[in-house]
Length: 260
Length: 260
DNA sequence: GCCGGGCATGGCACTCAGTTCCCTGATCGG
DNA sequence: CCGATCAGGGAACTGAGTGCCATGCCCGGC
Picture 1 (tube, rainbow over the protein chains, first blue to last red):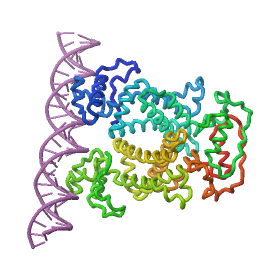
Picture 2: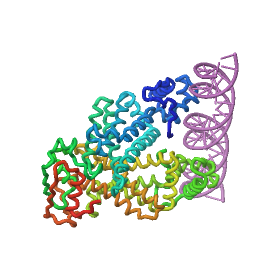
Picture 3: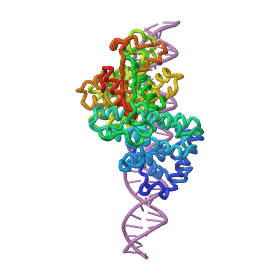
Picture 4: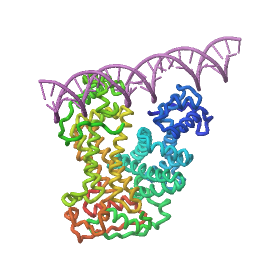
């Protein structure tokens, strides 16, 4: 229930693709869909795929792993993405840690969107089988940890840095999953990117961009300066005791952003 | 891996307490600590406890459940707490949904704080055994769902209500766990309540109180009005393009709250 | 005091996931 | 042509979790 062996890992994503692995996934899902997950034994899967039982566990460390055949690759992809702090000059907004982890979350969405029908089928499966739901939680947890670790690095030295990192990571994952599930419930008919973008925008609005973190001298002269002139000022007048979210809403309206 | 039978459920928390259940937990932890979780079989546990193997699975649906013997009760407690919307007049601040779910999270903390040594031992165990970590995730997930469902009810009809509910629930759980783990890492020497209060305050600050949700006529005339005079005003002047978190910080400083 | 029906427990056997060990056959370099 | 390496197959084993039934205990009824 942890790491997959993945003997085909050496090359990139366009590696030779072992047919056995794919045929096992295909056979498994065929049986899962017509018979249910728990009602299907590994022996039945390998019988249908025409391979030996031992080979199944060579490719998938557990029966649950066959349901999430590409998460290991996706997790590696996300770590690569978060590890690349080098190419920050070109693409705008990548300097903001919150925006960065939101983009990292979109890596996961892309994996789901690559195979809509497969993703929808898997969604229906995990929704009704508690064991798969639990397994999915452990996968999602690893994504969340990756985001949190990245943010902890960016927030290093800051007061409550790890707390803020954990909270933002959790919020980003929750928003991503909210959008993703909304898309999955629509049987892949809605716009996945739009759903997730909307959800992530909500989180980014709450936690805001935080350019101070990349250095005290960093001013919003880059992309964010395009929307607002630098010398304009905003004045907010508020009653004491007013709810903070309403103050924020007012400020954002003044700043010309979309409140919701 | 779901519901425990708990034959002693009928009465309240001070029910007769079946000795067999406790002796199984004690025997299990003794072996887990000296031999490791995976190196201990259920047969060894029941042998040490002096009961039949079948009885183990009567009290604990799986081997993992014996590590979290009181989470089922705690989850029920949290649901009770969130279900009680009746007694909202007396205790101040309970009207704010965010504050309410923070208090609900404190119910979990209380359970951990009741048995510090047990909680610390379990923490060390779950930290090194992947299977237990996964199981704990499924438990935490149920807490999070309870909070999210409550918030969804409170945010019903509001735009992006379910999204906001999911995000806040995730943030509250992440903050709670951050404080809780900080306490557990200190071997129970630090102040658990202080740790978690601090973490939850961070979240409450981010999402703010939201009195509009209990009705448009509701104004902060209750407890929150005690801290601030109603007619005072706060003026914030900010550059356009300033990071939102800094604006919030300024407003909060002006309001006299603790910024972090 | 005796009887019968729940009810908690124990014991046994079974299924199935996951692992260990070893065999087989193909491919490839010398 | 030979030997090394390695993907795959197969049998047997461990251990978690379940179903079934026997046993013994408590408790109210007669």
